[in-house]
Image 1 (cartoon, rainbow, N blue to C red):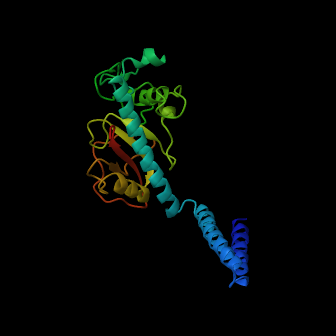
Image 2 (image 1 turned 45 degrees about the horizontal axis):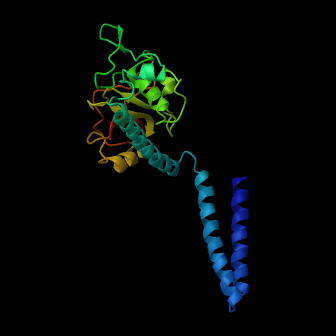
Image 3 (image 1 turned 90 degrees about the vertical axis):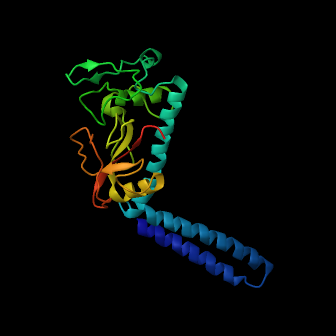
Length: 249
């Protein structure tokens, strides 16, 4: 089907190009040639788009998705900053949010295994993808941002279901401080190595273990994806990564 579409498109472009040469030498031909050049450019662009769509799962698609993800990361950082400017609190760590949005209080599991409220302490408590703490501040942050209309989606989504899916089938999530970052993190999981390198180049210094964006390939969907330090080996296009940036830009 895709080959048939490409063949028809190329035949149409060829016919229009040949028609233009029939009228060479007249003013009408000049106008016709002008139209044909435009049509040829449009046709070539369409061919490129169709061919790009056939490369699903290839390097080209990874590149496109990487640029989209970089913009999403910046957008979520800006959403957190806008919320903080409005309420002088971080989303999820806002003690006024339960009353304002009629949501349950955010609870954090203490070292003794007790659920306690730490809202208002100035930090976002909780870990990325912690399925044992559905009311953690890291999950409630998404609910607060959606109530605030800073992020799309239903504010009633609970726990891990509140985490937005990213372009590579993983998730965006918050963390108290992942991969050595101490002031809170915004992370994305299941990012292919090629895409992770592109995002790092676009947003930071291009190095896996330095700067504002750091990454590791050690993550597993079975755990909470919280680690003390990033990888030191360069990005590997054969691996998937969890990448993290600071909570605020």
